[in-house]
Length: 334
Picture (cartoon, rainbow, N blue to C red):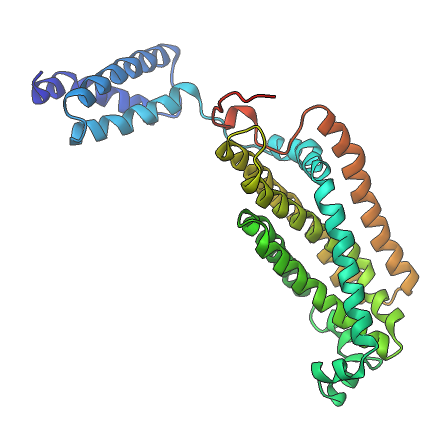
């Protein structure tokens, strides 16, 4: 077959197909014509690939056939309905399914933070190694930096800053989990060490109640989001080691897609925590009222996970993308 003659003979059909693909609205007759031309172009592409796979006509026709396929099959676009379905079922189900990872992570992490705080608070030499005595007094005194930190910037900009910082920590846990989970442990230790320093220094100054009154309102929801991200990252790292009955690539793809969705959901959770930290924590409300607001937010989130998420998980929700958007996977043994 002479390639130049073949291209010249069918160029008009390909140009007509390209014209139909570019149109936003087609009549019924044009839709039928589009389907017919798409099928013929697919056959033409097979012939060209057989005789001259690395030529310009093969590349150009490949692109045209791909665009025509999208036009014929009607590539699905994400909508607000998808977002609503994700937050109504996919996200809480994903959090619920990973509870065996993030709940132990939370317990162990908080235990580590408490031990660090006890160690710092009961050893003056450790406190001296952190900062000079004058600096420690500036940090822990009434009206010191630990207290003014939450009101040192305008609430709106502070909320944005807090949300960005926490979202970065969550993203690190989710993304770096694939590296056998080791970076996740490092991120957790850094966060717990910072929390432990605050507990230890304020406890040594006799102002632990003040510190906890500042941290708990937003910290409940904020740390829960971090622990969920860390648990998900650790689960992703374990999938690298033990993918179960699924091929490793298939298992990682599914867990990775669920982790990506988790990142979007946790960003919303962290936004709420950031608003509490910016507007409630530094407010003039009594400490008990501020803690109550944080506790209610945490309770509502846990009910969302363990009620809504549990029911969605029972229906088979996993937090993955819709079946139509996934690639095909080979069957696996049960």
